Length: 286
Image (cartoon, rainbow, N blue to C red; front, side):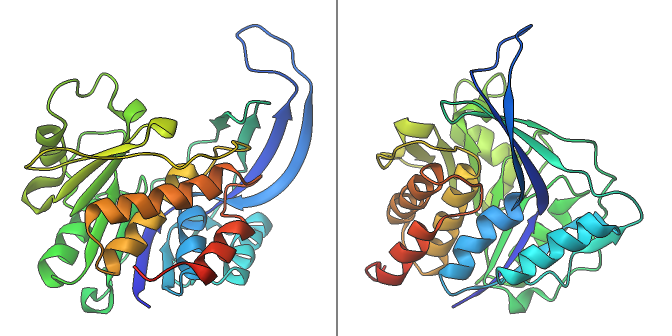
């Protein structure tokens, strides 16, 4: 068991299930799938809770009834939300427009700027994960690296090229389009700096590749019947974090992450499904 801090959003997702794939200028019918908890904090955090870790969330929600609902749902699932900030305003729903082939389009309102509070005491944490548009997350990640050599820092590549020190940087191949077409390792170092050990680039059903100062390490995806791709990347990150904190090498961690992601895409939700819980209760030791 480890203490893991997630700097990642928790959302209220509203699902709109379309009758056919999106097309510019088209007309569509939809079924309203109602509300569900989502966001990287929930999608990543729940699997880690099921893997017997203590997981705390740093995020922000509005000081309204919907914000209360988000916090209640997250707390019921075992996520510690005491570090979630409340802002004066409305908590907007995240619209997930789903098509019959399992793909989704995300529509959300602009959030207020999220300024991080006072830093936690880093000696307490064995893992720190960053997937947020908060202001200056590099201040926290650099402090975590410097103050606690035992803390594994993992970050999702953001939409900017601002520095973000971390041990493992994660991105999808789609994230890399028009940003880097040559040496992924050099690009990863330009973001994560000298602390970077691996830059993991995922490519859906084609698996993932870890770039480092040696030969790239490739790991295949796990076969799965795709139902809903929402949260697959978050589940992948959770599997990676769990394995690395448990002392696995990067190839084993990526294999485990691929298993977690396969459960995510086969589940009609963004948070992990019960099949992942069943797997974690019976999985072999790492």
